[in-house]
Image 1: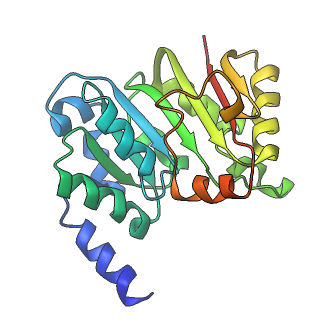
Image 2: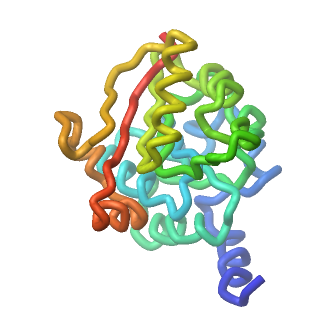
Length: 216
């Protein structure tokens, strides 16, 4: 592991807005009350990478709490560092395997979920790793409040098509859906937040797919 990665791993251990692995379990069911010290809704960004979406959502919506979730601590460092430096009080990060998400949040604790430019896991053998695989959707259903929404924003046409297929198969409720976000009526202030990678895709004239759905 490079020196910069080691430095970032050591540094996030000192950040008050980062929970790692087993330490995050103490927050289960108590994220709003014990970490954020309020009773506001909690929103997740899964596979958050550098946390660009979580950071920007937290700035836009001070009346909500945001938790970015990813396993790679050197990536989380960027968003967490921004949160500390800018004093963003409604922002936190959790470093875990997303497969274990039910160990860290209680049923009905989450108001909304964002999945932004996650690894599409295109190989058929890795279908169960896709963040919209039915096994993951079952977990989201447990975590979300009644009517809570899941948002997928991706440049990957295959992951988008797969997600649309699963939403239809499971008879979930689709609220918004487009295979070309910036040519649609949905490109508002929230959906126009752009990550580093999204800017790269757009420079190459790549379409951005978006679907929002819920379980009821």
